[in-house]
Length: 253
Image 1 (cartoon, rainbow, N blue to C red):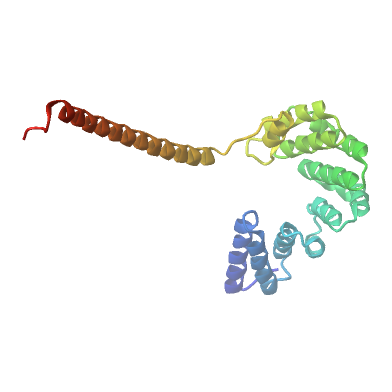
Image 2: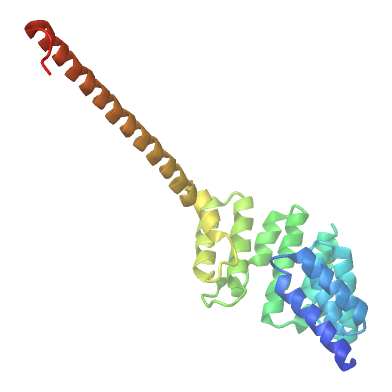
């Protein structure tokens, strides 16, 4: 669907703001998405952006409705995994599992299929089926040494599931593999590894501030010590003069 030039520019500006803010300020991104939606609700890209903004703010029912609308307009299956994850967010993991078995999954690209596997494993965990979640994540993509955009998250999810199952040594190994692949810091694998190894991170800034305070205390203590020594020296000098007076009489001018 084409829009008049001025309207299209207004919609585009709002969509740009959605993309810019969705990670750092999802509520503000959601507000911009609602403006774009009022301006052009029949544009698939607008419905998709509104869906992701709602998803980022955990408005899963609204997100699912927008994703379904976008899919009806385009016929694409690209949003299938995130739609299934919305079902999880709504407390319906069984529906997410059902979607994982639908023919649409076979039409997804490799990244989409991995994403669907992650959602399915999450649904298994929602239902308390941790062993089944581990099996769901075991795949050729997990075993591969090749690194793709989805590799860190897949390895991380596997490590996290292993840890929940009490398989700590294996979990540590896979958190390590996730960290090796995670060049962009998409996961907190390094923190999870440190936690498993009992390592505590110290706030360097806090240490600097405390060190500064300690230094101030030391300076004040040194100054006080010097002052005391000077005072003792003066008293000793006065005592010597008094002693001279006692032995030789009044001091001469």
